[in-house]
Image 1 (tube, one colour):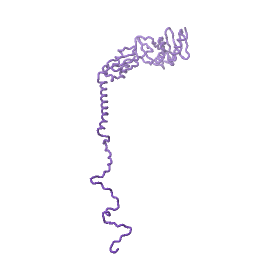
Image 2 (cartoon, rainbow, N blue to C red):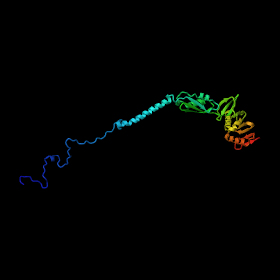
Image 3 (cartoon, rainbow, N blue to C red):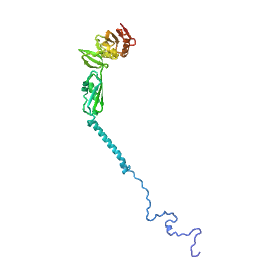
Length: 296
């Protein structure tokens, strides 16, 4: 068409000079927010806690949970302080009475004097081991002593005395010796039922090898192995050498014992012989598996 504009077939007419062309016609546009409203903000990333900063719950709930814990701690402190005062500061649990038992030769006054228990002191502060040490150190006759607290006001001492199994003559007195060979006391009179040692080893060929202490040890082994009924009838233990021990019994009877070895077996053999041959006057148990009795 003359003087006009010729449009291409298939191409729609569009004005590329308008607003749509400038803003990118054909591209989808985001919806506009209504006036007066704000677009939602993206959630913030939580910040890491600083060093030393508390991260636990705060507020009244946390304070309520801490309350019982603090109360329990306060109660524990009060109980500890109260218990300490009762044990050490009050007059309720103090030593008022001291008792000693188990003595046969010693008196209660001797034991209590040696113990020196601090009457009036708090019972819990009494050193029981120190008391035991004092009693044993001051009274050699005491073999052991058990010191116990008798709540609320007492201390008890259970004494075990040494038992003499042999006597050693010393001038006009007698030295008591127990089954361990301990010489623990000197008495003016021989206790009944305890044999006296007679040591005659001066001319023995073994005197140089076995001195007096060793021979005393052998005699103690023999006396300590005697059954109680036989020990009460034993008057004397004669030691001539290491392997020559002889017992003198009541009614003129004697026993060849030999050495102190196998003393337990020899004691049992002698007990059997005395029952089997009550009228015999001499017994030989130096070989305990073949004991013998003679005389009538």
